[in-house]
Image 1 (cartoon, rainbow, N blue to C red):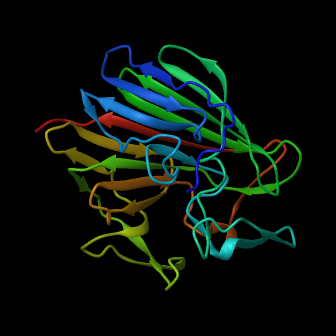
Image 2 (image 1 turned 90 degrees about the horizontal axis):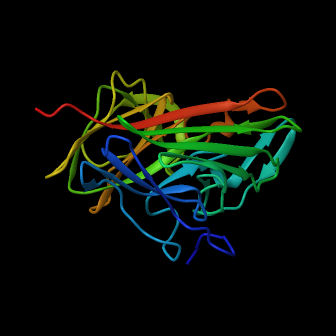
Length: 270
């Protein structure tokens, strides 16, 4: 079983909003992830630990790419690039989710993290995690001080059931037989999803049974929605669709970075 790679695990960090609304646990050693979000006394996430598969719990950062890269291969700058295939037959979710992040600053309500990216281009990523007065605020920036490279950023939260998801109107990327988007946009079907959506007309809303109503907001214009598991569902903001590196990747490099934001806040009770 794959585990997080920190040789000497760093202590988890507990953050609390000044209003008492939210308590957030950050695990720097296991991918710089949110290990827990308790909001209005209700745990929102599937919790876990370093012996659990790092793709399957908490809310982890996806960087320097999000979702699948077809067969772990793409070309950039006229050169072919090979990535480790970690969900056969594709590479998935980058290299930040199972590597340790360093703590650069910390307070009672927030923490800043940084990682040097372990992939062919090098580069770095930072995260800011804040338990704010109105909810949880996240920001991630990816860059490279030495050379151009393709980049994506996003988050993969595992929200625990029972919960109902309300999705605004959107379009869905059609998938081929291997789970990679074809580039064609279609209507969102009824039934279980494991798909990338775009052109949302509003914010996704989670209604936890016997718990709070939660609104998800992001600067990202793509969301992967995964509703197949019985114990959880995932609503994942990301800066582009899966396999973007094989189509029209965003480029970062000296003097140019990519930043994404994501907030998890309470909604209005009816």
